[in-house]
Each structure stands twice: as structure tokens, then as C-alpha cells.
Image (cartoon, rainbow, N blue to C red; front, side, top):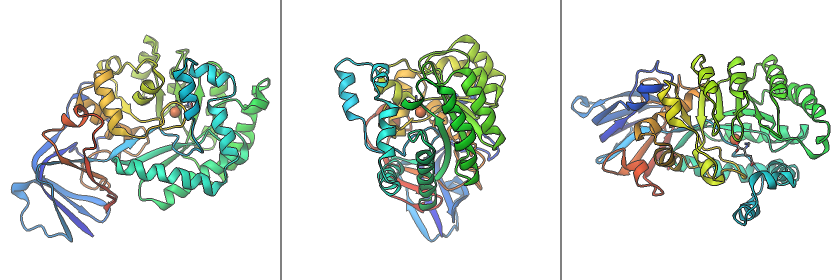
Length: 412
Ligand code: NIG
Ligand code: FE
């Protein structure tokens, strides 16, 4: 099946297929072709160029994109989209004055979601989760990382990871799975955390590896959760099973988690709302990409990741949603991009680079996703009629997406 998109007002993010991420100054540039065409064959981008050169191309289906923009789908490299129930009551409790930490300390937060998930069947968890995935596809997301971490028992972590696998098998969207057993310390291990990290290392990891259920391993490296020593032990064990690290670090406190991630050649270090000068120095020496999660900052009213400092230091930066029931009940990358522009002073070019090619890099898939490049997967957004790409983050809260194509399949 071939699809030809013609009369495209502007084709965005056109790059050589060997560009895997963009850093620093380069993030300010978004290469485009005005008045363009794009040819998709099966699940790949076959060709593109100026309309002046679009002669005698015949396709099974032609889409006229006059006045519209065409760009690669969003690559959301950090989500917890598989969860059970919701935490709307905690949302109201926070409005009334309780803090995120106070709610967690009285058994709410991650432990609350874990309790709900443990009492939810695999089938029900799948049904609740796949609805959310279908919704984010409509919002333009074409590749998704999904974490476990609301199971916190051997059985329930496996249940989450099996649901992630089933989503990956059922839908054309690219899915990467991350094992986040070290997301919180279950109540029964409160006074002997070592027994829980031992459970992760000696029981969960071998079973997950045996069923081939995860690509990456993650730890919530934070005060009151997992220390540098715990994180070190868990990442080291994960590596023996071939799981590449990604980390939750510096959300509330900066105490060396980033340097540890760099030491383990983490693919990404995520959150970074709190950043020390030595964190930036550590990242400069590495291939690890920082990932900012602005809708989490928005929802929890915590600081935004200092994107300007990171980019101005010459680093690459990715943006992701963090979609989860506690700190970010939203998987809308369009909102993430607007918020990054408005609150983090990223330019539209930087925010779009951070949400496409750099998001793909943060999942280790930028060889196949994240830009309009010959041979990459045909994951494409066609917008409605808009004046320019600046308009996408500018007119926030409005849906600008008309059509989403995933691996050559028209989804909406
Ligand atoms: O990335 N920070 C840790 N984990 C999630 C939130 C978890 C929750 O509150 O359920 C996050 O923000
Ligand atoms: Fe997260």
C-alpha cells in the first residue's frame, strides 16, 4: 500500500537518516521543505521533496494537504500509561493543601496505585490501559515508552509488563518496555528496604528477563525512595540481564543520581527539576540524554526543568509526558510542547526537536523514528490548516491534528 501526500504547506523535521539526536545550538533549527510532497510505501517513508519534483508519482491513495503541515509523530519516551483506577481524590486533597509528599507518607501516592493494580485483573488492566494508548495516538504519539512500577510484587510487576507486551502486539505503535520495580518501597518492606531490593534483583529481574518483558530498567532515585547505593545495585543487576538504564532522578533533590546514570551509560535521565552545576558537567561527558517532563511540573506545581541551562550548555534535551495517575494524568504531547515553550522558554523549533528526534533517541529508536528521512518508519502527523508551525504551541489547548499515520496505517 502506498500513500502520496501532496501540496504540503511545510514538511517539518526533514533530516538525513543518520542523525540520531540534536544538541545545543542545533536544536534551534528545524529543517523544513515548503510546498512539499511525501511518499509512503508500506510502513516506510519512501521519498519526499518539493512539489515541483512530484511528477508521475502514482500511489494507491493520495491525500491533499494544502495549507497543512506534515511532521513526524511525537515520540513519548517516558510514560506510566499502564495503571489501574485513578487518584482524583489525591488531586482534590492537594488542592485543599496537602503536599505530594504528605499524601505519599500516609500511604497514598504510588502505593495507593499499587494497591489498586494488585486487585485488578490482567484483562481489566489491559482494557483500561489500551484506551489511553488509543487516545494518545489520536493526539499524535507514534512511539511510546511504558514503565512498570505500580505492581511492586513479583506477580503484579509481571502482570504490568505482560499488559505492556500485549499493547505492543495489538497496536502498530512502537512500544518500549521499562522495568521500574524500584518505584516505591512497599509497606511490608518499610523497615527492611534491603529485602525489597533483593526481591527486585533476585526474583523479579530473572523472571522478567526469562520472559523477555523489558528493554530498559529504571529506578526512582530520590530521598525516601531509592538511594545512590540502592540504585547502583539495581542498575548493575539489570545490566547483567542486558537491560539498559533509564532513571527517575533530581525530581525533588539533587544528590548525584545523574553522575550515577552517566556512569552506567544510561540512555536517559528523566525529571531534573532540581539541577546542580555538577549534573550538567556529568552530562557533557556522556551520550545520556536528559528528559524534561513539563506537564508533571505543571500538575504538581514544582519547578520546571531548566531547559535553557541544559540546551545552552550544548546538551541535547528530550520532552516527554510522564503520563501517570499521580503526578501527570495526561499523555498529551501537544500540551507538553506548549508548556515547554511557555514555561521553559524553549523555542518552537527546540520543543519540536525535543519531542521527535530526541524523544526517539531517549528510547534508542532514532535510527527508525523521529524525523522525515528516507527509509524511516512512516509515522506521520498531518495538521489541520494552520498559519505556521509556531501556531502549534502558541494556540495551546486546541487540537491541531487532523490525521495520524503509524507505520503507513492511517489511524484517524
Ligand atoms: O515520574 N516520580 C516518580 N514516579 C512518577 C509519579 C508516580 C506517581 O505519583 O504515581 C513520576 O512522576
Ligand atoms: Fe515517571
